[in-house]
Image 1: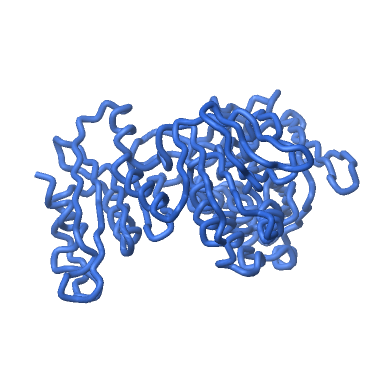
Image 2 (image 1 turned 90 degrees about the vertical axis):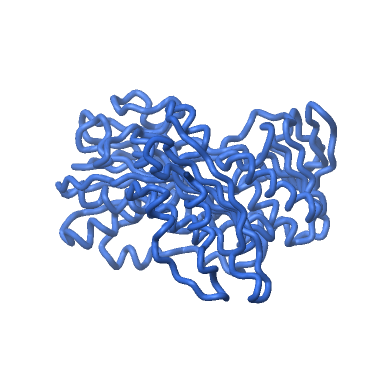
Length: 443
């Protein structure tokens, strides 16, 4: 059987590896548009900042290792058209500028996303960057080392935008974040983003929320930006306004896609066309807590779904148990984590919910350097079942959100979680942990 995988990063290479481990005789060909396979794109801001001094550390497995495993990889090859009726694809060799056809028995779409680039005047100027691929990270790293780069403007206040802002602070740059919405990091609730914003402001970052960029200015290179509220100098502009599924090549087929272009799949990763599967950031995914398909582009989910796709391409029928959308981010001296529903999700689903907001310490005050942890829990009023959790603090927050993710995954009530036997020792936690305190605040 010949299996073609389109996309060679998280979901695609997880599937390819699983296929070859399960059936060494299967023929697996991976077409990847970029120059690299199987890398951790979430590490890009830390490579740019210098926290990681070698981009090769982000590569989980090299091309040579995949080839040795019997996986045939074709880098700098872009699939530009699908013809499911004849089980063929049209491929463009980007190095040789040639187009050819290939055929498959089964196909996986794992193309991930592409950055959204607004149609701004000046977006093509030298000094305007995005940060999505490893190639983007290498280019930005080379540029940012120039002593001429002092004023950096980041357009967009989501995960990548804020992580890049932190990287630029670490590099000693003057940093401005311009966000069209009324606050940054909107996958978190406002109680947490207010604290994160104060941390950024305290470290010298300028936050311009509720502001629309209208033009990037400059002649030979970028020199500034103009918004609907003012003009600001910029030696470098990083566009980080979001991503969209890289699925343009499925147009004209019977593959169903959502409004944003994400491929619609079932819990076995099957598309609406026989023998074509999809997984990763290019596809929707099943939410365990909301019990519906949604779009949550996360590397953790992509790897899990890729693994399941690998066995299902070989004829199995494994179902994805569902995601909670668990995610975390470091914002200078703070860490934020979230899992399950946010308040907006509960409102949209018309759930009769309640919330608690609790502040506690990461360990007792009689051990040195206790720091505050703020936790917000969302729960179903009738049953007390936990629906979502978010937290912010200097340390120990994300691992506590992981604890709550397990509780939400297993549909535990706050009362049950409030009595779970967690570790206690003064250097690590109190006899009543912050998790206990938050859950027991739900009456």
